[in-house]
Image (cartoon, rainbow, N blue to C red):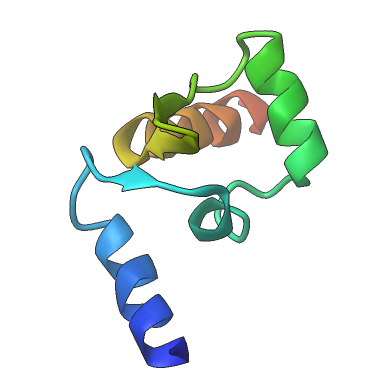
Length: 76
């Protein structure tokens, strides 16, 4: 099972249109789930995509948001 999860997580970065769940994002966004969801609520983070009852995010949007956080946090 772990091998399968690792393969799925690695594939996340290969496809910017991939739909990913929180478990795939948690080690990549750099903030807690509650902090991330608060930013989503305030529209300061990528908005989720609902598929039935499941919640997903578009990996490319999350990656771009993360890069912007890095850029804005650097002192020039």
